[in-house]
Image 1 (tube, rainbow over the protein chains, first blue to last red):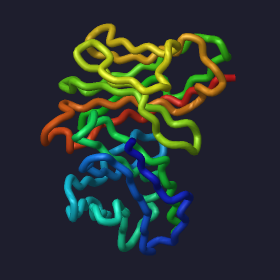
Image 2: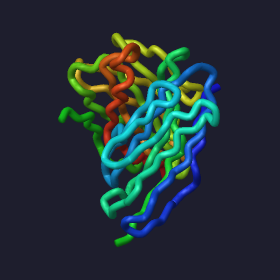
Image 3: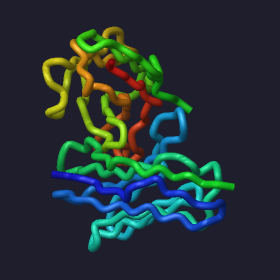
Length: 113
Length: 118
């Protein structure tokens, strides 16, 4: 079946540090890949997506590249801000299956001033 | 921007009691979902709902769970007799279409209901 594995958190960084949150996946078909973000007290919001191999999703300074050869979709940001503190969820949606997203367990990011 | 609204934000209930979690999806969306997240664990799919019936459900969604869209706007999850292990954050989500280009816009989630069973 489909699954998503994310690095354990929390990830604690100082402001302006470089961020990487690792995500790898297992899927039977050719999934679409997503990163969702959950700010404190809010719902999950779509941050970025990629729908095919070598696509790069980007939004708000965050990027992730769909790597089919390594089945990965790592989230990166060059310079984090305190306002980026949130929980980040990697997810996949398999168009060869039911489309219902499969999520990882989330990675908490804490950014200190 | 349209939102998915969930109420209450936090509910505490005694083991064995029935609870109803409420969601108001985005008005022109057609597919509705419940997910849950036990603290520190994955966000798990429970059930999807389309055209006034369940379209898919996971093994978690047993006879203790039911969903309903009673009035065309609300979408509810009922747990008939709560157990301690039902304590989790429950998320409602909706999407306009699940296939084609619209599927890749992603799902809109509510902010969740934290259910605590004591």
